[in-house]
Image (cartoon, rainbow, N blue to C red; front, side):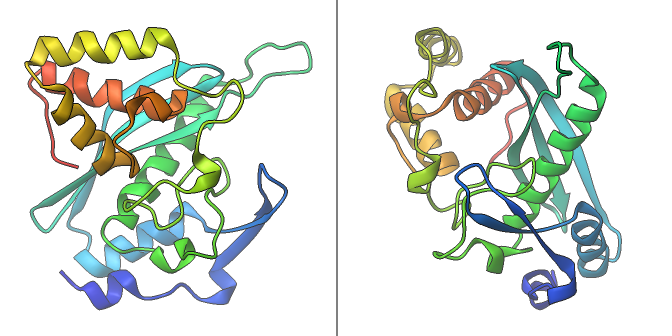
Length: 212
């Protein structure tokens, strides 16, 4: 594994910006740049798999696994469902593609790609992406649930049901939650995070468990 290549900062010409949810300017790189970096670092010998996809609270959420050099990293990506002025869904296919790109890039950060964009002074999301700053090590303050964005009672009940089904203890779920989101308090997750945790537990129950 060429860590120097993986962790090499992207050039200024590759870094784009957009206005984020909280009004701050966000740095990001486009998906094709991440794919090129993976190709360069692994000589094209890598693969990305979609593990699950769901729709929840106006979003599509994709869980995916990136494998390279015998190592797998799994994360989730999301994208708001695009609707017309009349409230009609425009294209779930395009929304899923955006969520998949988000997922791939998040998996890639676990290999070190683009980590310089997630420093302590960076925002917590990218275009069509909702990533915690210092991604994979903690959940930023801005990603904490606010207002009506807290995990639902139904999601909590589903997590408990799945935990019982696969024979996990509450402590195991808390440990996985901390590994994925930087907090062991399941009831502080937002709906998107809860959906990703549920998808992971469902995969465990289906015999498709994969280490994050």
